[in-house]
Amino acid sequence: MQLYPTLPEARAATALRDGLVVLALALFIFVGVKVHDAVDRLAVLGAGVTDAGGAVRSGFDDAADAVKDVPIVGGPVGDGLKSAGSGAGSPIEDVGRQGEQSAHDLANLLGVVTALIPAALLLSTFLPGRIRQVRGLTAAALVLADPADPARRAAIAQRAAFDLPYGTLIRHTRDPLGELQAGRFDPLVAAVLEDAGLRPRVRSKSG
Image 1 (spheres, helix red, strand yellow):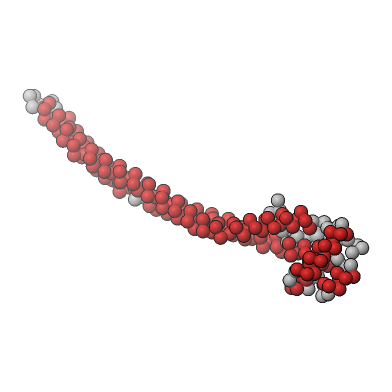
Image 2: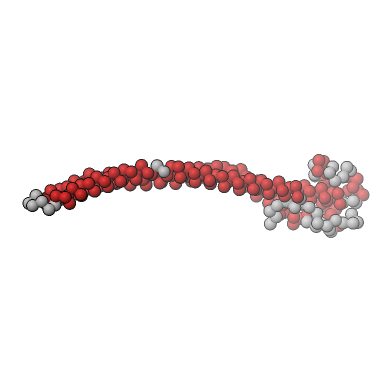
């Protein structure tokens, strides 16, 4: 599999694009973590309610402990205070725990959504073209790499002369059809390899 072009300029440009995409993904994750942490701090409100409920229950328990030794009425009064503390404090604690858990759940959701949505949009735009490029490079490397066989070089030269844009051809020869007729295939083969993003490894001396 040919992941990158072998031409230095094309390779550098492709590597730069890949690096920018990776950097953007890292940024999205960073922002998602920050959003999660910011929302997760709201859990302190639920924790405060839980503590308040615990304080109410604890206050009644302390009062119950203080009167339990009073003769005759100490036991019933203490039990009543404990029951009242449980009835008053426990629901408050439950509400606080639910609020705390809801804040954690919301923080997780917003953190994931903040990172995932832009990352998905970026990858859906970038990956199809990058996959096509890798497939094209891989196919070109198999077909065009080191085209030393004369018949193969002639076929590649014909493709260059008849199919490549003139802007690509002119960088290698000002007379592509003349080169083809004269059997000078080197510049035409070089143009095809450049168009595919590949750099020739060998050059024919005989054309």
